[in-house]
Length: 215
Ligand code: SAM
Image (cartoon, rainbow, N blue to C red):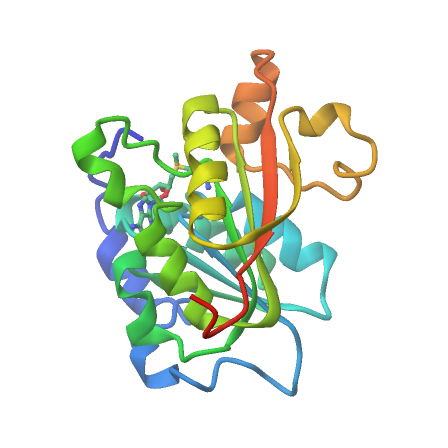
């Protein structure tokens, strides 16, 4: 993703009541009244997470984005929608364990994650074994990760990464939009809208961690 400096983004984010400014302070207490808690990592401009929060008011959502220049777009969407079940964070996924305690999240969504095609950057892929270890730690027992992309080399890498890290794949499709069951209720991301309009098939997987303590 090309990043442009967005004037005033930092200040607007700091002043927004929809952005959790100090996520570390909520570590261990994100869940509200026993409601399900779902996180999107690398949410971009926030179409998916705002769509999910609007469609599922019984569930709480947290949208995480690394860059202010991108996060500000999601903040603006949320300022218009004021969804009570959506909180936004500016955070690098590397710091996930500083903000979330073990077993806090029911579902983690990764959508069109940056591919980092060079082998020497493989650890930066959000589906690398290093990141899967972090997700495993913060997921509840029975929690899962969902991952969508149109980038097939990244998708095949990710399938192997989940399998080799001991995760169980619940389903895998290499053409989500052609699958009436798996695409039911699908909320499109910005990248999904863009790349499916060009005719690219969208791949998706869902995976649950292996048993804790078994590896
Ligand atoms: N998920 C959106 C979509 O599908 O339209 C955006 C996809 S964009 C290719 C990937 C996004 O992930 C970018 O906004 C990028 O800044 C963010 N990102 C990449 N690495 C990240 C990390 N380590 N932590 C948090 N966000 C990250």
